[in-house]
Image 1 (cartoon, rainbow, N blue to C red):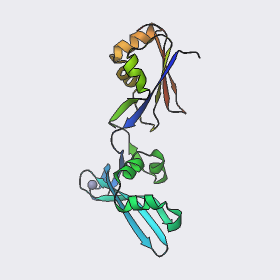
Image 2 (cartoon, rainbow, N blue to C red; image 1 turned 180 degrees about the vertical axis):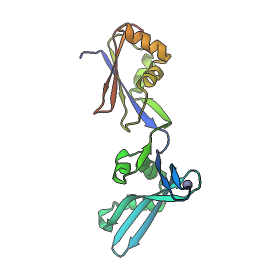
Image 3 (cartoon, rainbow, N blue to C red; image 1 turned 90 degrees about the vertical axis):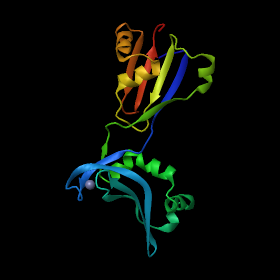
Image 4 (cartoon, rainbow, N blue to C red; image 1 turned 45 degrees about the horizontal axis):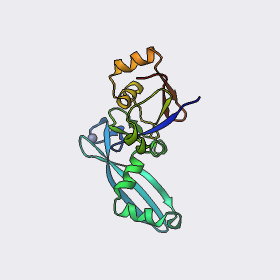
Length: 192
Ligand SMILES: [Zn+2]
C-alpha cells in the first residue's frame, strides 16, 4: 500500500462503561455504573482492592475486583495511594478496560457509549485541513468500542452517511477494517 500522507485518529470513550448484571435490589438484570470509588481492605499481609459499581435504578452496589489477596509489596506505591484517594484517572482506566470486565466475568453495556475522535498529527490540521488523493486515514479503536464504521467515517470526513456510501461506490474512498488490531483504514483514492 502506498500513500502520501498517513493521518491517525484515536477513538476515546468519554465515560466509563456501564455493566449489565442481576441486581438483587431490583430483582432483575439492570445497568450498573462506575462510582469512581475504590474500596481497599487490608487483611493481615494481604490487600484487596475493589472498584465499586452501583445500580442506576436502586443504587445497590456491586464490587468488581481490582486486586485480590495481593501482597502489599507487589502493588506500586503511587497506584496504592490512588486507590485510597479514589483517583478518577485510575477509575476511568479500569472503567474502560475490557480485560478488567472479562476478568470479573461481567457483561459490558456496549450500547450508547459516548466517544470522541481525536486526530493525532495536529500539525497537519494547521497546514492542510483537507483530504487528498493518496491520504491514508487510520482510526485506532484501542478501547474496542462497538462503533458503527460508517458513522465514524462520516464524522471524520465531515460528510453524511449517504455521502460516504456514494464515495465508496465511486471508488473514491476505500474503507477497511482490521478487526484484530481494532483499526479502521480509510484510503483516499481520488479528490473528495
Ligand atoms: Zn437495582
